[in-house]
Length: 305
Image (cartoon, rainbow, N blue to C red; front, side, top):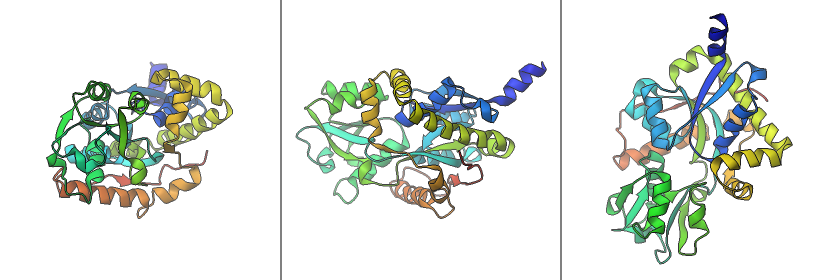
């Protein structure tokens, strides 16, 4: 009984979806990199950002690697679960993209066309940003919601005209001359970042474990640098892509280092400003309610590697 209680106290579950940066958490689990810091990291895989967000809203998981728009959505759907953001994992600098059939030359050409996306706030936000300043609104598009794999297949089959996608799902489109990129996160620096989002109760009751999780993230980054071939092979295999494709996907990401985290997560820092800007755009587009809380950034859990 005491052994079981001790084990449960060490376990820390983190929910992830398929995304290159998230695989470093999987690497940490597989190599038991959290144990020197007093935690046993356990990964919970979700099939989509929407499924992961709903699991967090329900209380099935208290820590997730997610995007800023999805964290905003949690605050809309379950204000009591409005998360604290404790670590910036990565910034997408081109990895999230709007792909379309060749012949559709700008996002404005999507008016009246069928555009596929996951039922996530991030996907809608990227569409909104792609249309910003154009004489086309998101309501002028015919939106079709499916999972990430189905969306790519629908575009390849000619059943939709464009899709919001990301690695590893976008590789068939990027390698197919029938499709090209209309817009990407490269055009919106500092906005599409992935963070560790933590439920308020968890942040209150498990501070040492969360600091250990931050240390485990840095341990995974360090392990991957020392054992690059092995690590990339393991992470790529889980994503069902080649090691070369995994490294290509990472070209669209930037990983902030430990010394940058304090500035990023400052109360008036880039992440807080990005959340405010996103919330304003989503409110204007009537995608979120004006009176809901917003995720809070915190530096309370930051530690050096």
